[in-house]
Image 1 (tube, rainbow, N blue to C red):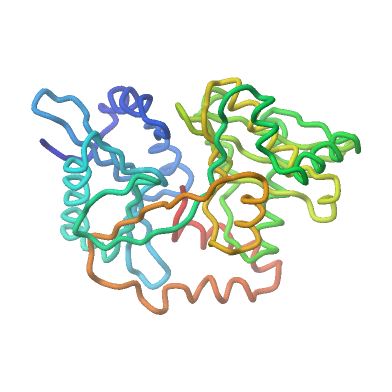
Image 2: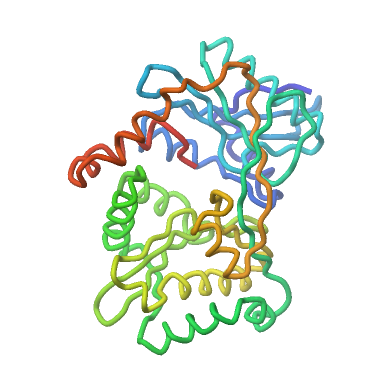
Length: 330
């Protein structure tokens, strides 16, 4: 078994392997990260003696405000055919960090727990199973959720798809995230995602009422899992239930593609966002993160985010993308 860093020559073989994974990451994400943030993507690939891929781990290196560097994997990034191969990839990531002088790393295998000697941190995501007919999926929703969806439909909210909605979506997304003190992706990031991924992998959905776009989401597709990591609603329009309508639309689109799970995203257990997903009908699952380095994160690592949350809105808008590229991107 050999673990090495993938190159552009591996793109086709990488994609064929990822097509078999419930939530794989095609190789085009390499170029998206490099072009939008000018960071270093590091895609680990494990091969057997015949040159067949048996594991992957897409990751990237970010430089934080204090000069330290961190290797971070994609969510659900570490995927391998056996736990031993997964550990071989973790060891390769460890050696890479040591050789490059990278102080920290965070590698996740998603909801798959890997027996490993390395330090493990468990977080929570919420999954909604899409099983049976769409009518049976509808019945899985809570009564309050179904009533909110009906209310939104009755108030004239319609769901539309199309990349031409990106300016409206980005305006809502960036404003709401900055209001909450959360760093944001750049507009160019979303432009690259929509251009490179294509409709088979991503769709931009918006909720419109009259002539106004009031909410939107970026819906990503894998073989068995759909996800909407970027979603926002314009302030003051929550009463029309655009978020519930968008999530219901995402469920229907996933069902039409034979996708069996909608990943509603990671949230802090017990938070209002987490509880809203549970109330929708989602089921909590553990997400496993591993660090191969014994050094603890600096107690000052979170200082920029703390200060960012206290800045005036105008300054947040200028610094939001800069802060985003120092941490977890995907």
